[in-house]
Image (cartoon, rainbow, N blue to C red; front, side):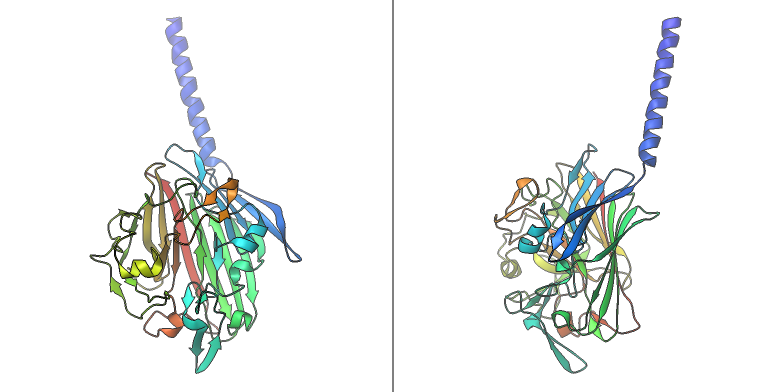
Length: 381
């Protein structure tokens, strides 16, 4: 009887040990760590490591509000990075194609770098051939933001603030912007933007991480499957400026109403794909009400089992398939980023909205508050 009783006690001890360790994992504390990352001009730049109660980790620098790395679990519980990026702040200053950054004042393109408000024409930088892209020569991605780490009920957070003076990059009005990154304890990276102005202006902020859920860009992402909650895209001309119409996705390579791999139809004989050299288009999101936080997309990577869902308050979302990565950039760990080694999902208003009155407005008036929430939620199959 004693051997049997001893075995029973061993089994009971093992069960209790597992239960206690499980509780400890669930109750492990989130944390935020700050380190110096470098300098930009005469400004010090820091990098903040946010770790949630599940062990997921986001490293974010106050240079451009840039997500340098984002580590989430795979189907076996192993943490791995899922975004492209660089080792040093100098590389972000000198080489970055908007890796992981906060985009503003206006995400995407404005045709010929011009728009009109109340009869006055404003001229912006033409930094994308003849068009204006992502806020200009020195947009929000190239600013050093004031940073404040915070612990919240949802998880560790980083609050970033920047005041864009009247006339910066040609935009009217002093725009005061706050961006809060939260690494929630359910493994979501949430971005909350607010902005106010002292005179009528335009505002269209977004986030620009390059994702590869398999291996952070060591291989291409064409085997990722994606479903997008959209029946229409915003078609563009040969300079990637919207025509002003909406195009149904049914029967085209842009139909992701059911899940398809990104690479399945990317080389199809389609005019829009030729204009973009792949996917570089805004999808019109289906919503019950304007401004509601709702489901936009789901991406799955079959080998790691990682799943990313996107939720947004914005009316559109840009899918970019890394068409202009060309092997000239070397990132974290010495990885050379080849064409289509990552994709972007950028919730936003439609491109060239200031010149398209039929599109949802991007005008911000004094006394009003711009609000925009983006959630990238990670899980596994």
